[in-house]
Structure formats: C-alpha cells, structure tokens
Image (cartoon, rainbow, N blue to C red; front, side, top):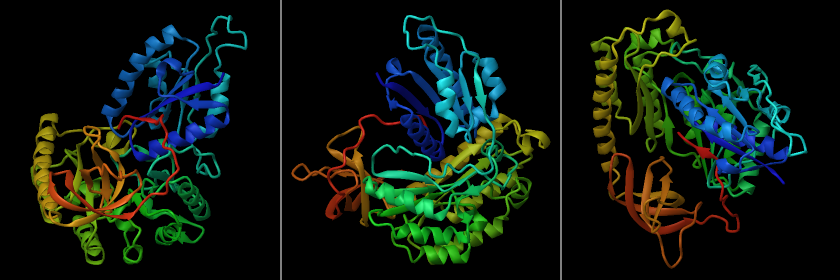
Length: 469
C-alpha cells in the first residue's frame, strides 16, 4: 500500500513552488498526494512568517490537528517553511505534538527526516512509539534545489524559483533571516525547467524571487534571462514577482519592450510615499527616485499595468508622512495595491531598534483611508477598459457559475465571460474578449475570437495542492 502525504500551503507563490518541490521529493520516496486528512500518513503545513496573523492562523490549524494526533498518533505532523525557521522553539513549546520542523533550505532531507519518524514497523499490530521531534532549520547559502525533482500540479500556470533569499535587509522584513542570503539558479536550469513545463502543457510561467529583478548568475542578468525564457516554444506568457524598484534599469525596461510574451503587468513595491520613512526602512530609493522609475516604465511600456505594496503605521510615521503616501498613490494611480498596517516581527531590525509607537487604532484608521482611496482609483482604472479587447488566458470555469469562464489578460486583469456551449473553451486557451463592464477587481465581457487554443490531451490533476492564501 502506498504512503500518502497531505501538504497545506500558506502564504506566497514562493511557498506554493516550495510545496511542489517537497511533494516531488516525497513522491520519489514512494508517497502519493492526497487532499483527505483521514487517509494521510504525513501532514505538512508549509508556512509563512511575513505577518503575525499568518503565524497565529497556523497555530490555530495545529490546534485542530491535535485531535488527529490523538486518534492516529502514527501520523507524522510537520511544519515547514518560513515560520518553521523563525519560530522553531515556540512551535515545539506551544505544539509539542508536532513531529517535524523543517526550514526552507532543508527540503532535500525531507524524505530522510520523515523516514526517521516512522511510528510503526512492518508489523501493524505494534503500538505506536513516541519519537522525539526532529528540527532541521539550517540555512544553506548555496541551496537552490538545482536538479531537484519538482512535481508540479498540472494546469495552465506554474512557477520557477529563480532566486532564493534576500540581501536587502529592509528593517521591517523577516525574509533574509528565514530564507537566507540571496542566490540565483543557473540560467541553463531555468530554461530547462521552462521547457519541461511547456512539454507538460503549461502555458504561463512565473519567475519567482524575493527581489527577482536583481537576478545575476554567470554573467547573465535578469534582462538576459527574460530573453532566454522568451525563446521557449509552448510558453505563451511570462510573468515575474517581485522586482525591487532600483533594479528596474533602463536596460531592463528597454529589453522588456522587445519581448511580446511578457505579461504586461509589474508589481513594484513602494512601501511608503515618505522619503524619510523609506530611508528609515532601509529602502534604497527616495520618493522622487521611485516616481522616476515609474515614469521610465510608463514611457517605454505604456500598455503595462502597475500594482504595489504599501505599509502604513511604520514606527514614528506622522500624519504628514501618511499623507505623503496618500498623495503618491493619487499621483501614480496604481491599478491595484496590497495594503497593510505595520506589524512588528521579532528578529527584524525595526523590532530591535524602533519602538512600535503608532497606536493600533491609528494604524487601522490610516489603512482604511488608504484602501478607500485605492478602491476608487482601481475602479476608475478598470472603467477605462470598457470597450477594449483583450487576449484572455483561460483558467477554467468560475466557482459560482460553471456556464462562465474565468481567465486573465496579459495585464493580469481577471476577466469573466460566457462559456461556448457548442465548442467549449478549455484551460490554456487564449480568447479575445471585449470588455462590457467592470468592478474594481474584475472585468466582464464577450468572447469574440479564439486566438490560440491549448494543446489537447493533457489531463488536469484531480487532487491539487491545498493553498490557504
């Protein structure tokens, strides 16, 4: 009888890609993927540590899994990812029933570690044996999982982790401490993975890194890498996330303008509109420099949409500095924004040296004002698309209505249109859609032409890797 593993993923696309890596390594060791907790021999929570709320959510989920360990003590329960790296001691103190704590650089050893935690021998009549938890959170400055087996969930879009770790050390960010220093995958392996994905039926690939535009390996920079991936037959769209603003050089922008397969969307985190706050955050640009970078992008890439990340309530942020952020957002008119109030993360420079002195009610009020303003801007930006025609990459039927199809435009706008009952649209098809109406986050339209149908024959997985955002 085969062994089965359930992997629940929390957090960003980097974690989703790591989940596929972990499953690939475990499958090589004889494991099958399951979505059913009741039949799992191993349950892994792949975790995020960027915000406190994410970590408390994991502790809540572990509380529910405590009953599983009572009923089936032979099940191996593990916590992997960034939270495992950051909170290994607290994890074992608060959840002593957890068997395994594994950091992001130890996944190659995961099959071996799980094997050591086998609670039963071949004789199923034996009583479960209590085994001390195993902790492996060693950071490895060279680990890029080169040539490791990645078992991707079949679908339209997939990821390639081209870079791990980060060297920027922004004061508010825990990533360099839980994922280590920046290092890059060789360009040859990136291209090899893209070709493998194309052969498996993927139509869109996203290149992942904490500061992906700072990629550099063996004389190949990010502009060169984009050109190399662009030559892969079968991949129709290329995306990347998340770039660092000052790495957006004129050379990169000019190269992007020559690559039609690139998705016309850039996520460019700003964090604050105040130069003083940016300096205190150890961001490597001022308000004025960031505006120059956006102007460079919009000059050479006029069809691209832009989104950003913003933090309000950073230590010592004044009302005047918050208004600088509001005015920057009004001036630049991002299509979308991901907005948060500052959450102190133990271990960061800000937590050690900056008193968290902005009251919570002030943080919440500022965030609400920013969200309200951005929602209006996003709505207005979406209305500019009415009557326009976009090429939409079909993802599949909508959750609410199987007679409707959902997909994404090149500029990453979610678009919904009616299914063709006589000749149905399939995941991976590219369809021209005329936009008829739009909300702040979704466009609705009418299909007018099939542009590029997906190759037929590939079956999509019935069991997906569970992702919890």
